[in-house]
Amino acid sequence: MSTLIPIGPTLTGTVVTPDLDTSLAAYCDYLHASVLEEAAVSSEQARLWGKPQLEGSPLVTLQSPSGAPWMRLLGIPGLLPAQPFKELGWMALEILVEDVAALWQTLDASPFEIYRGPTDSGNASGMQLVGPAGEVLYLTQLRAPEAPFDIAPAQAVVDRLFTPVSACLRRDEALAVYSKLGARRSWSFDTTLGSVNRAHGLDPSLKHPVGTVQLSGRSMVEINQLGVAKSRPPVEGKLPAGIVMVSFVVDNLDNIGLRPISPPLSPTGALYGGQRVAACRGAAGELLELIEVAG
Image (tube, rainbow, N blue to C red; front, side):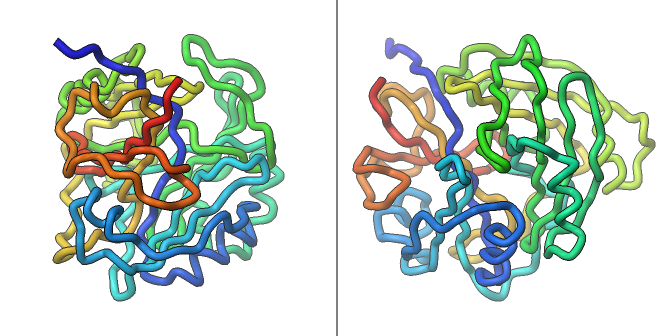
């Protein structure tokens, strides 16, 4: 019987955008990102993701001032933007920042929609943005550790992806995915999700089943069980707009408890560093890219 291996940290969220230039300018001009690598989707990547028709599509990897490669933009023209909080799969990317209020003051003229302005909760402050492709970003400022979770405060004005957020139909199935990948601990509870309730016109006090998973590298995954969410519209041979994939570090691809879309490969690119890579599907069909980095 194979031994389960740890997963984490989270590295990168991949957003499909119908307008690559607009999205690139938004992140570089307003969220302090810089270009780490401009490339095209390789045949190996397209095979790993189960989307051979994506080969040759433009792919830009962005990094924060701290050097964290937290965002990739994949350009696919002609798509309709994602519908925030209404679709199954990857729903949001939660990013550590140094000062939420200061960022908020710079975003009025940006391509980002401020879905929810700054709010305080315990040792954290946060706000929510919707990007040009319909992607949702949670910007979170931590003033002190939030027990029982293992998260470190930001090391730059916009630092790193620490909690990708998914929407699924059954919380337990989604939690099981990360258990098979070697997650350390998880918690299940019911809570209000104000932005979800607002997007669907629901009672603001309505609670939803939620799960959080502690990963290595002071990272997490949040799972929202949303019976009101719908599957994303099919895009023949390609991927829909919005957040389509999250990349994670794993210790050993030979021991993962999920079946990859294709056997591991070693694609070129700044994100991979020559390591073996595989991809699999989560409980709602979302893509998880797993990059092997020996401990």
